Amino acid sequence: YAPRPSDIIYNANLAVGVASSITLPGTDELYCVSFRYQPGSAVFVDTTGATAVSPGTGVLTAGTSELNPATLTLKAGDDISMITDYDTAYVSVVIWRIGQ
Image (cartoon, rainbow, N blue to C red; front, side, top):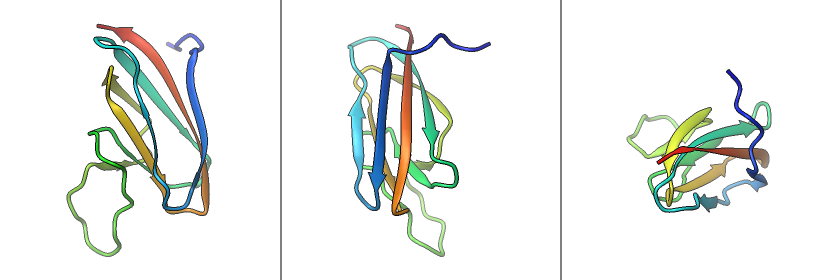
């Protein structure tokens, strides 16, 4: 299975320590959201409405940011926040509407 090309695509070159976010459009829709990252980069993604954060070093801690997720099912109005601790990281977010 391969999805059809999407007409909802966001691209960015994230700068170190600067969060960037988008809000999924609509009111009742569900979306399949696919994340693409520059090879070798670390991008933390938060979909809870909080701003994404890079974790500290040395100790595992609870958090809401996920490292380089591949694909998520999200709903209209959800916020997607992304951050990197690399100098820069190219990212693409490709979105398909999958229902209500």
